[in-house]
Image 1 (tube, helix red, strand yellow):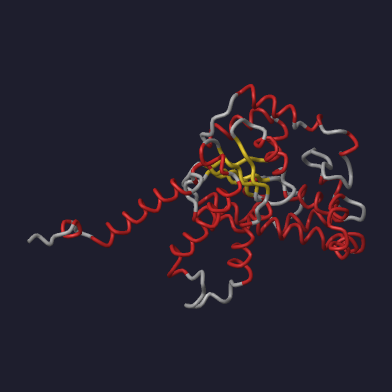
Image 2 (spheres, one colour):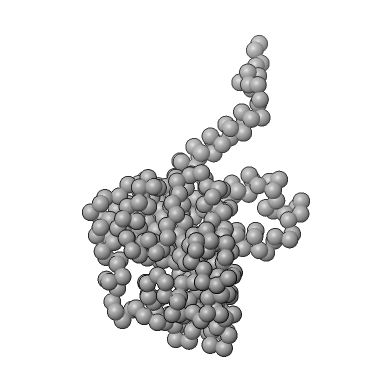
Length: 315
C-alpha cells in the first residue's frame, strides 16, 4: 500500500504549505469578496482636495466611492498612538503574529466593501476616500497589497490655513458639528496659533504615514499634488487613471471634470467660512501670519522639503 503524499516530494514542505495557503486565500477572496485589486484608496489628510477628487471619480462609469469609512483610524490610531508603548509579547497586533492580524484587517475591509457595494464584485472599481483615516495607510496597504493607491498631497501651509478658517465661529465645520466643536471655535478666536500648530502636527502624522505606505507599496500607485490637479485637472485625471491602469472613457472624463470644476460651484457656496473656501494654491501667504507660517514650516519641514522643495520662507 502506497502511503506517500504530495508533501513527500517537496523539498521544503513548510514553504510549500505557506505558498499554497496564500493561493487558497486568494481564491477565497475572489469568490467571496470584491477583488482587492479593484480597490482604489485615496490617502493624505483633510483639506487636501479628496472630496473633489472623490466626487469626480464617483461620477465615472463603473466607479463607486466609499466616503470615509475611517477604517484607517480604527487600526491606525490604536497601533501608532494608543498602544505604541504597550507592544509586549501578548499585544494583539504584535510583530510575531503580524501575518495573522493583517489577514483580519484584510477580511474586515473586504467584508465591509462587498456588503455595501456588491455591484463592484461583478464589475468596476471602488474608490475608498480615506483622508481622515490616513494614519492607518501603512497597515491597510500592507494588508491589501494588490490595491491601487492615490497619495494626494497639498502644501501644509494651505492645509493649516483652511483648517484655521474651518475652526472659526460660523464656519461650515462649526455649523456641522455644533456644540461638539465649541472649544475648538473658542481656541481659533483666542489662540489661533495653537490651531495652526495642531493642524501642522496632524498633517505630519497623516501625510507622513501616507508617505510611508506609498514608499512601501509595490502595487499600482500615483502621487498627486493638489496644485497640479487644480491647474490641469483633465490632464491629471487622465494621468491618475493611466498610472493606476484603471480604464476610463475620455468623453466621460471630460464631462466629469467640467461638472465638478471650481467655476461650476455656485458663488454662494464659496468663500471664507465655506467648505469650498478658495481653491487657489498659495493662499496661505495672505491667510497666515508670519509667526503661523514659521510654525507650519518648522513642524512639517521634512515633508515640505520632499514635496515642495525650496519653498520655505523661514529658516
